[in-house]
Image (cartoon, rainbow, N blue to C red; front, side, top):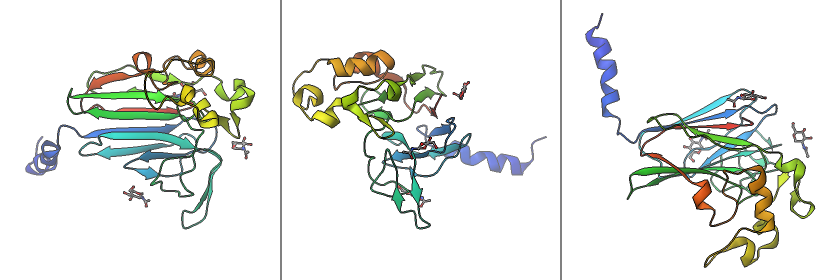
Length: 222
Ligand SMILES: *[C@@H]1O[C@H](CO)[C@@H](O)[C@H](O)[C@H]1NC(C)=O
Ligand SMILES: *[C@@H]1O[C@H](CO)[C@@H](O)[C@H](O)[C@H]1NC(C)=O
Ligand SMILES: *[C@@H]1O[C@H](CO)[C@@H](O)[C@H](O)[C@H]1NC(C)=O
């Protein structure tokens, strides 16, 4: 039975722009995480089994999502994390320090498509899976191999595994201009995370698209 009140309550839904999207960020790890979402969203603590839902009425055009590990913060939200630390803030306003596994989302205004990927261009700290949840889009992308356990000695970091660009800062690994090729070190990541972005021109095997305005779930330790 429809009352005038229920019609009134439904009405605001029609005012939402078609680009309203949602990120559900889920901690399926056996340990506490402090995920962060930039440029909009900030960061917070997320215990095992908890989900952080972010609703964006309009956009965003870009999002980078990562987890911080082994953090301690004081009551004012100042502290530090072993991996992914964003200048010591609980509620991040700057990108995290590597190593961190990154889920990325972007809106291509021109082609009217979303693109999404998992990147190890800043290394790896926590296994991640990113999945579209709306618009009939369903391709999950996952990077959940034992990257930390098998990390080559020169890339090892406390709580994670560095990307070679972070360690060596050379054109071969960082490729800030011109074309670049996979390296033995990027192949280490590719072998364990076939769908992840492992070197700067890894797009063909690592970037996925959905219709504009799709929502996503990001699961840590899928
Ligand atoms: C965290 O920062 C975002 C802006 O980046 C802000 O919208 C949000 O309210 C902040 N959250 C807390 C708990 O302070
Ligand atoms: C980080 O946290 C994990 C899980 O709680 C723990 O097993 C590990 O020992 C911690 N590492 C450091 C360096 O504190
Ligand atoms: C959470 O992790 C367990 C294994 O520890 C796995 O079976 C389950 O599918 C994961 N859940 C999600 C949503 O990925």
